[in-house]
Length: 371
Ligand SMILES: [Zn+2]
Ligand SMILES: [Zn+2]
Image (cartoon, rainbow, N blue to C red):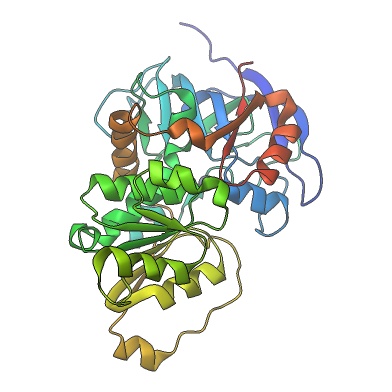
C-alpha cells in the first residue's frame, strides 16, 4: 500500500486592495473522505476578481482568488467513490471543472433545490486562508482540494482549455438566467441583453439556441459590437434609448418595450436601464450586480401598474453547469469563442495577468499553472 503523499506547490496570496499578490510555498494533504485533490491546469480572471483587487468587493483576507478553474484529478479518498454531475466515476487524470461552490445537501435551501444558496455554502476563491497559504481554496494556486458536496463535471476532450475555464461562472450564470426566465419568455418577441461581456454574450448565444427571435444587446464599448452580432444578436447599440429604436424598426411594436430584459453588465445604471426598457407585463432579470452598488429607484405604483416581474439570479444550480458545458461542446466550432479570450500567461507572472485583465474588460485573461 502506498503512503498518502503531500503535494508541494505555490499559492498567490491576496492580502488586500492595491497590494500585489505574493507567491508562497505550501502543501496540500491527501484528500479526506468526500474530497478530491486536483492539480490546477488553468485559472481565468473573472471580473469579480478584478473588483476584489480594486477594493470594490469585500473579501476576508488573506485569501487565494480565482474561481474559474479547470484541473486534473490527482486523487480522492480511497473509501469513497465520487461521481460527476452526469454519473461518471471520477478518476485520477480526469480533466474536470466544478461549480463555484460546495453545498451541504441537507439545509433548508438545499432541501428547496436552491443549493447555490446553501446555509453552509463554501465558495471557491472567496474563503480566507491561513497566512502560510494552507487551506487555500482558490484557483490562483498549483492545487486545490474540492470539498464534499462540490458538483464536479468531467470535461469533454473536444472543449479546449480556454473555452472550458469560464464555463463554471460566466456561462453557467447565463444558463441559470435563461432557465429561470423560462422558455416561454425566451421565445417572446424581443429580448434586451445589457452587457456584451462573457456572461452577456453567453446569454445571447444560449437564448438564440433556445429559440429567441429578436435580441438587442446594449454594449457601451463599440469595439465589442461586431462580436455581439457574431454571437447571435440582431442589433447592438451603445445606449438603451437606441435599443428601443431597434425594436421599433424590427418588430414594428411602436416603442412598447422589451418582453424580457437581462442585466449582465453589473451596474446600478444597467439595472435602471433594464427597468426603463421592459414592457408592461414584461420580465426583468438581474444577475450582473454581484458587488455593492448604489440603490436604484423602484416606484411601487409603477411596478403594480406596469405589472412587472423582477427576478435576481445569483450563482447557479449544478444543472446549469451541465447545460453550459453541453452548449460549449456543441457550439465550440460555430461561435467565435476565441474572441473572448485574451492574454494567457504563466502562473509565476500572475501580477501581470491581473493587470492585463483590469485593463481589458470583456476578454478573459488566463494563468497557466503548468507552464
Ligand atoms: Zn466569476
Ligand atoms: Zn445546504
